[in-house]
Length: 142
Image (tube, rainbow, N blue to C red; front, side):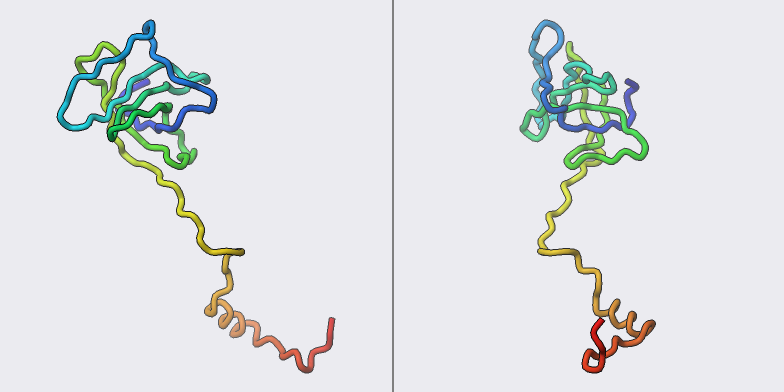
C-alpha cells in the first residue's frame, strides 16, 4: 500500500479481533511529551483490501481497519480520513497518523411525525397559481 495516500479508518468488521504479528511480541513505543497519534499494523483484513491497526490517540486505544478510499463510496458515521507516515526508530510496523477529516454522526431528529413539507409560503403560492380552494358550504360530497 503506497504511503501518502488518503485512507479511511473505520471500526473493525464484526467478529474480527486484531492480533500482533511476530509471535505475539508487544510493541514498545518511545516516550514523547505530546500525546502521539500512532497506528500499529497488526495484519491484513479478511478480504485483503486493507490492514488492521491498533491506534493510540487522545489517551485511548482503539482497534480499526485502514482501507484505500474509493470514489463515490460514502464514509460510515464516525469514520475518518487519515494519512499514515512511517514512524522512525521502531521495530514494528508503526505509523504516525494525521487526521484529515472525521465524519460526525448525523444529528438526531427532534420533531415527531412526518416531515413538514407545506409551509405558509408554499400554501400561498399554491393559491396564487391554482386559486383558492372552494368553501365547503356549497360543495357537494364526492
